[in-house]
Length: 190
Image (cartoon, rainbow, N blue to C red):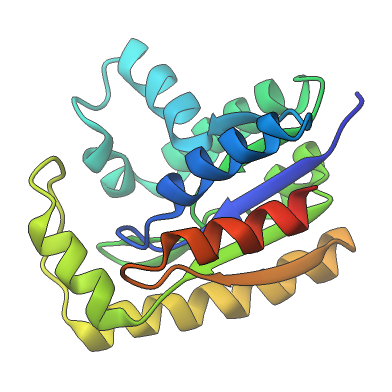
């Protein structure tokens, strides 16, 4: 397969998808093409066909074996896509029993990423974004819980880099500074 595989992660509410969409638009204006793939969408479509979930927010409540199987199927399908690919996903998923690696070894071996980008911002900004997002059904979390999740993502990103040999980049997506986050992302992806 040809092209770059770039994984972009961030906790729910950080705005990673907004950064991805705008970055892809600017890159295409400059003649660089990327296809954006949402890892969870691949998993959800399989889970929905198997009638084991009704909505995406139920995915993180599936048992570990079901999640592992869905991750494997999604990573195999995404690995077959040619060209430059951005994989929009989560470095970890907060489940009722603890954090689950969003990119376990079997997923990383399939995807063979060139770069992993963590989109981050201050936990209070994420909390405010989550509270105003009526399109999702999220568990209630406080500032400290969100910060713990971001800290855990940094820790697992280091292990992902060790397993794959790819580099890790942090991009801050602060309130009212989306353009700065997009500029940083475009520079890295160019």
